[in-house]
Length: 528
Image 1: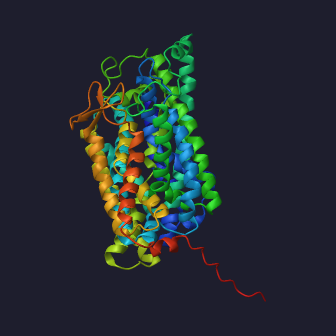
Image 2: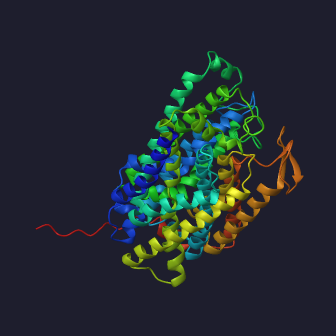
């Protein structure tokens, strides 16, 4: 009967790209390819945003976060991050989003070009490209995990490299032909698919768990949401770190990351984009709660046994996939696995291509491309980035840490650059005297300092005091700074360095006045 599961998965992997191509239609221009000519409804963009930022990492790894939480640590404290995410989205909706949508910009970094110049625009874009390459390579690898488990259940040993190659080909097909409209709609469909799969898992588990499991979970603090006991500096989900750090992280990811901004630009107007962004925060909260609850139920189902040492799995993140394959009935198992695979099709290729063409390529050749040439270059770079993602995903399969949940590793990657990206935007909005050279020096300095802090500075896990500088992997009571603080610290460094450098100028930067000048009203034809 497991052949039914494989059939469902195969049909899905073939059908979803074809559906994306059909929805996307024929692309006539670069603007249509990159931003969809503003024809996407707000609720579709909302679901696409949620899918793009969580997808596979949420489905596979968030249940593990709740499962492995030690008694007393709180199994639902990851939800406190989502509270911060909502606050951050509200700020972006009223501060940064109007600059992108009302300004008719193709990428978020075009705003930095208007404020500072092409040098900052190119620097920010290249940083985004490298960050997305690492983060999405990790996400593509995460999607390969359940496939390997499924094939293993049939006695087939297939390498991660082969799996990510197949997923990459499926992903690039509809991105290449359908543009951002296909990407957004496929995102929305796949998000609904894997949420329905999560609900189905809860229904199955509710019939399998013994009486009293809920009381036992409450006694073990598995439903604790707010953590006031952990050190704010080292506790990943300590209340202060999660609320403040989560808000600033959301401001960076949804205000300075082209992956998200592109989806919001595809809506009809600024009001629609705001609705999509703010609503996505509440949808994320629900989604986190859903998969954390699954993690608690799995903890009760497996009696809290260690996934690697006692259940014999390859890593903690294989726990949920293993349950789906071995415990769910045939047909339903295939449906849930297909939903997880759908997360791989949440493509960042359009965002990578648009930023490459408009922020980097046009700067290199020294001129703006025609709409036809933009479309051509967009498709070329879509294929190039797909190849790079496949290579990096295979690399993560070989070298990624097996101790931390993949979702934590993914969020840590953005910590190196998100602070510099968001800081550059805020520097342009807040510091009138700041020039391009000030912004570039501040940007590069922030990335260097954040690398030093993340990799080298260690804190005492108990009281949060600085232990010293140690570039070896944190162990025991010596841990790195909690990842929710990475972005905020980066923003502070960027503003301090850029602000101090701006003091050497006697007058405001003329570009500052330009970005705050009211838009000229469009000319209208005289009435007959």
